Image (cartoon, rainbow, N blue to C red; front, side):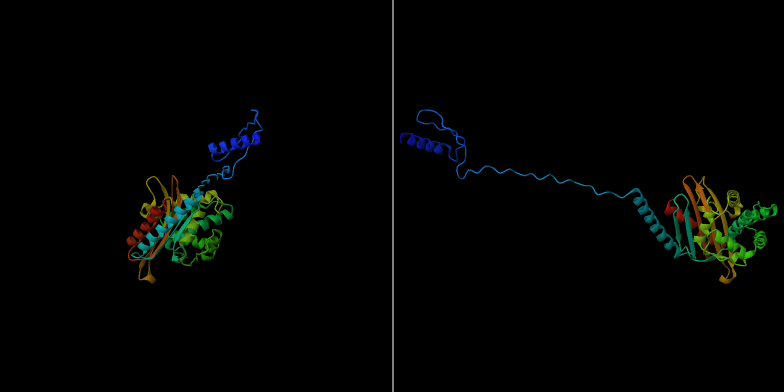
Length: 313
């Protein structure tokens, strides 16, 4: 009993001193020797639970727009602004349409692109292209007479020279067949060549074919067309050239006609190309119902310059 009583007293004393629990306490027997160590906890002294720490969330940055998407958005913004500017100008000007082909990017723009207008003398570019195709088909160069007539037709806008070539080619049916080869789907050739009806979309398509290395015109034909249209008489270098900047080159063919069926109000048209540096664009502006020739020139030049201002080519 002595041994038992001493053990109980020892436990009680430790319990008072330790309070909450006893972990690994050594106990003495009556002879002063250690008993086996005891490990454990008393009720109410729970071991701390292990904590699970959640990983910090990973921040991801959504992908931004690609360069192509940014360019497309900028293009759309410019087109919208140009549409608005042309619509505003059209409210105070005679009727007009305009189209632009940017050869560097392949992008096309048109305002009222499928509206039909009488060509007046811009049809002479179609006659020239048909003349060049006809000579190519025969495997020959232009004759000296054909070349002389072509120079007068384009550089001086000579009507007699045009009538001579138009007749030699086979008149409206022949020029119409050439137009199909050139991809002109909205142009109807008239027996009175100046009354041919066309659209600005077709006219920039024709201008593109005059320089397309994969088109129906061969290198010699393209070179001659460029030479003639880049050396028009200075009295006729209005219209498209107004959109050219200093140091840039241009080609042009204009048309003007006081139309008897419109109370002798003026048809004023201009087609051509501006090149230099990073610029290579074809432009066509067609208009009618102009009170005067000079007034019509002001309209087509204003429209051509607006396309450059907003499209930034």
